[in-house]
Image (cartoon, rainbow, N blue to C red; front, side, top):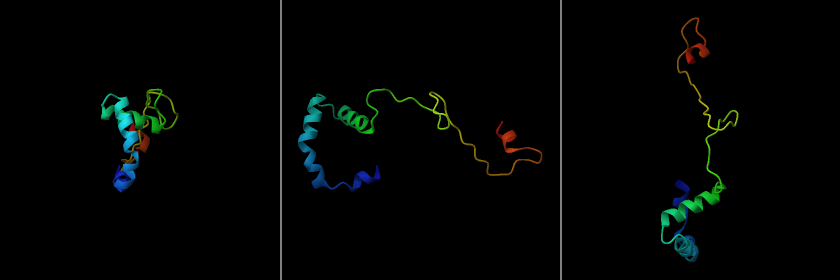
Amino acid sequence: MKKLEDVKEDVTELFNDAAKMLVDRFKGDKDKALKSCLAYISGHYQTTLVGRSLLTGQEKQTTLELTFYAEPARGMSAQDKAW
């Protein structure tokens, strides 16, 4: 998002006609026009995104990362502490 602030005004002027046509195509709904553009640019415009595990890629699963800032109690492993 920060990089968008670096776009020069004179560059954005080059897209005036295309932006107007796009907004007209969505019957004046600028929000829907922008969201549609972002979906298309991201490559995720035909199917709904589904959460996946970062480890296995399995749909509707979540990967958790546990970080311990202190050593586990004596006789206890990190796995025990997580459990």
